Length: 281
Ligand SMILES: Cc1cc2nc3c(=O)[nH]c(=O)nc-3n(C[C@H](O)[C@H](O)[C@H](O)COP(=O)(O)OP(=O)(O)OC[C@H]3O[C@@H](n4cnc5c(N)ncnc54)[C@H](O)[C@@H]3O)c2cc1C
Image 1 (cartoon, protein in one colour):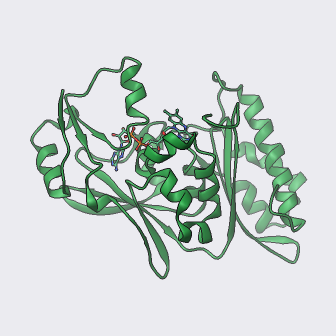
Image 2 (cartoon, protein in one colour):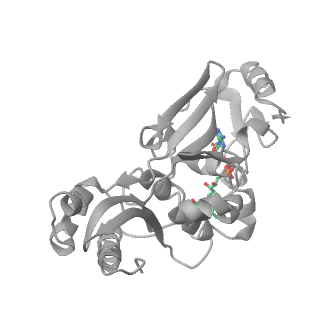
């Protein structure tokens, strides 16, 4: 196996372009890749370690958005003051992500490209309407996160392309994150969700809910939120609409029925609490 650590994007494109695309694997924090190799996945022909690329680093706040470099670690997200002020659900997801060692290595770019239906940063990013900035030999492009992830472990990244950053529009709405795992830390979500919301006169004037681990990719529960916001449905009457947007499966962590039931129960409890003036819990 060949290993390189390019120092700039230009160097990365040069090194990546010198081998057939299928032979190149990009390494960021390695917290998804390395356990795979330890479990017997064949080593790549050419490992390109992107950790030294300055273009993928940093958190930049602008008037209407915040741009988070792909190499930003989960711990850096957790500690960033602008993200703490504006994007509570993302900070809560970072807080409940793995344990300290993994949080210091795992990157947000790796979480996006890994595209797990249970990835913890994904529900907040979906609920915020995040956009993914991609850089490649042909230049830059941006894609809404919902279109970027196409299935479990699948994205629209073309050979040679990298995720450069993720961009979050600044919203005036509040947000929260919920995760159910089989234990308190170092647990993959059985169900997770993020909500962005605003309450006016005892009703939701804005509501977006993104749920993970209940479909092949994270889903926005638009049928439910539309009924609650636009049609004035009650939480109890509308909760069955969640079934329109999810398709959970049985796996080693939980049966599909359990995921469906727990999502609806915790969501109904949380939404009732928000309308009652609480913080959702
Ligand atoms: C013990 C343990 C606990 C974990 N707990 C959690 C958890 O609680 N929640 C959770 O969501 N995940 C968890 N994970 C999974 C993992 O930590 C995350 O998915 C993490 O965000 C991956 O980031 P990374 O930088 O380590 O990615 P890597 O392993 O380096 O890469 C992952 C994939 O993304 C690609 N990639 C990485 N960066 C880029 C980029 N910028 N452009 C293009 N491709 C890129 C790589 O080629 C690879 O295919 C856990 C993992 C372990 C080992």
